Amino acid sequence: MERILNDHEKIKRAEEIYYRRNHRNVAMGNRGIEPRRPKTHLGSKILLEMLILVILAVTVFAVKNKDYIFTQNFLESVSKYNFNLSEKFDFIMAYLKEDDENEEEGIFVNNQPAEQNQPVIENMAEPQSLAPTEPNPVPVPENQNPFIKPIEGVVTSGFGARESVYQNVTGNHTGVDIGANSGTQILASMSGVVTQVSREGDYGNHIRITKDNVTTLYAHCQDILVAEGQEIMQGQVIATVGSTGNSTGPHLHFEIRIDDVPINPAEKINF
Image 1 (tube, rainbow, N blue to C red):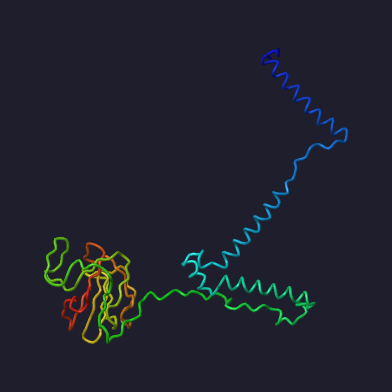
Image 2 (cartoon, rainbow, N blue to C red; image 1 turned 120 degrees about the vertical axis):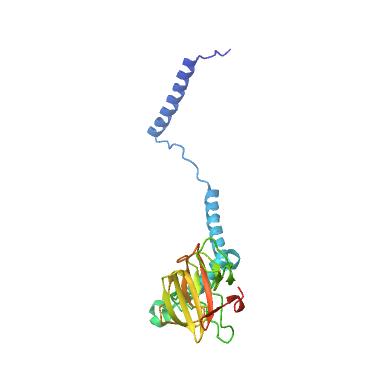
């Protein structure tokens, strides 16, 4: 019957086994015996080569089928620079193939004139500089509508009699108030000449544009972008929405005057 070893004996036995194994490898090395080396598996090499081939195939597939892979936004951005990935890939492959055929026939391409040696790649012009687009919309012809909306927004106060506990205004509102965020661009409702640019009074920063006997007024502006005497086209950006003068919040006070008599802008413009 085998005797049960105590803890001390177990530790000693383990140290002996470790010592014998260590000295066995040293002894084999001294006798010129090659120690065991890890085997190289041919299957691993084949698997690595297959993985490389799969990556190349996926890359070629992605280039050839970009319409189904890349997003529309990406394709639109690429198209701005006249750069077609599929066409360039096809051209490069055809060029390399032609070069190989010439070498097989004994034709040295490098000895040809430089003009024949240069590959002609179409649609590879340098990207055109993207100039900032004009923020002003295309002016509306005068014979279609003499007035357009100066801004998009909600009419917060209409034309005519009104009462206000917040503003020191007369009982007769001479225009319409259109609510909008500060900095919103204000467009010229009609063509004309800037007859007044002022930063005083209840109107705050305001502009008057006149043509014949008709005047449009834009009040409580934040920034004024035109000068007196300047000719203005309908739809041109002339100022930005603010809350200057006698105002409780950002909005545009807009007026139409005929012979200096205010009329209801809603009769001329569909707000």
